Length: 336
Ligand SMILES: [Zn+2]
Image 1: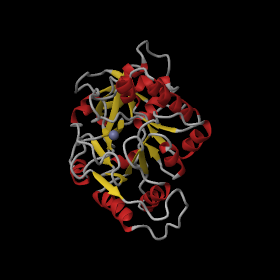
Image 2: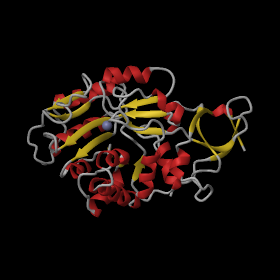
Image 3: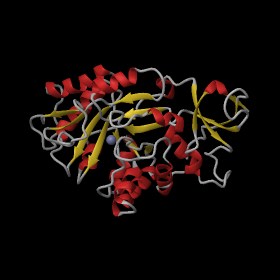
Image 4: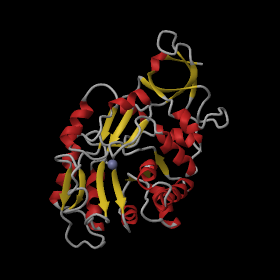
């Protein structure tokens, strides 16, 4: 349960839907997209004011983020991965979007003294930071190639944290979520779907991590399947343990509906998130520290009708109501 973020409001008499009564909410953010793989601009008309790009050519995404107008873009820059690791061999990867990094010496999970970090890891993190990244993206896909050992992953985390950047990991395949949690990673970019995490590991994840949901891609790729059930079970226990859940769709990964995705929200409900939790997942400022850090002070979300975070006020299912959200200038709303 989160504190409701909504305030009753009426649309101004000058614009579209003059005088319509509803709820003003903070700007909604899709916390996992790829702007090089899909044009994000159309999502603004469908309720999303900002996006977090989690893997792109740093120069391309930095240029996109510097552009005026919506959606606002925060980004990770390049995918950091092991030599030969996913997605270095994928045809869809944009030019310059993958940095393959050699393992640090003495790996195999040994705790190391990180006072002498290998230059290549610091340089790779510095490069993303110099382009303006807000987060560092690491790929650990054990089902599709080599992954960092623990010492190397810890070196990436140390280098990122030294620049006040969180680390977000794609964990796929046996042991990768555990590796990310043990190494002090701050976020998982997909709810883990390839293996069940035990309660003890979930508790540790909930204490330190944010998880980006992306349940709808699991549903799309596998249907109502063991993989989807696994993801929902992991997320349900993560949420129940107090974990920070972020709405994210992986927009750019194949065919997905544009805008606020009602399927994603319905699957989050199946994982036990209540109305106020869904709104919080959409409005969480991650990876920026504060909502105000997005520079969206003049922007709000408007949902017509009763406050969607207050249960039982509308016969329409909550995911469908939230999918009607619109991005509006805050000035066009009069608080009631
Ligand atoms: Zn992605």
